[in-house]
Length: 260
Image (cartoon, rainbow, N blue to C red; front, side):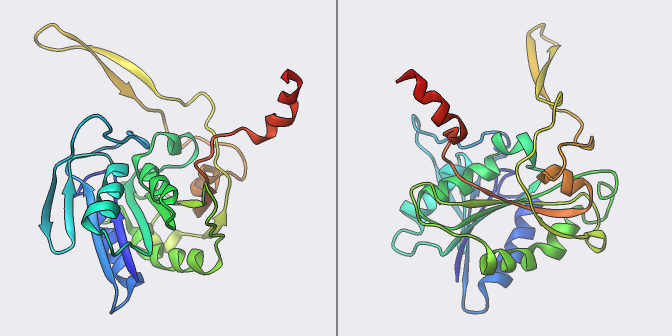
């Protein structure tokens, strides 16, 4: 199997090393793992592409490249230049430092890469490691992902739903904020929503007197909607969420016929 890996934390992120280990085992002795990742951290860029400016790509080693662009850019660079003529069988993005459950998924460059791969007709999975009090101070903060990543992907490849329609399914996996030995299992889950926990801004003044705004997050340990990805994660389970890039609110279409 030929696997492309990328992320949004950057080419030198420890989570990418974890993913490379997992991908290597998944690809097998005769397989290949290609890395095309952002040269610098690109967290929060979502599905952005560098449409109005060029992107420099630097080879860092055998099958290892850094691109000065977004995670989605990295997928485009890999498919249409670096790996042109030898497309991957699977695209993996992560392992993200921090969760991409609930509304976090909408901002995630990790998911943006998986989404782009799906739009390009490839099976794709985003993987993220939830952080919390039980794993923040572990020697290996990615212990849950490292311990269970390979088995989770094998199960998903074997039993998951994979489509080749216009907006093909891709997957969002989040590992819970616990040690690997404390993971309770695997759950298929819908995307959740954390109420009153959105992003905001914090004003600050620089030493030169200029005013800036820092984007602020919210606590990630508060309970959220029952049965959602974040809910299962906080209960110690790995969540697997099928997603599509189709943004249509299908449930509202029938009611909207009144405007015709």
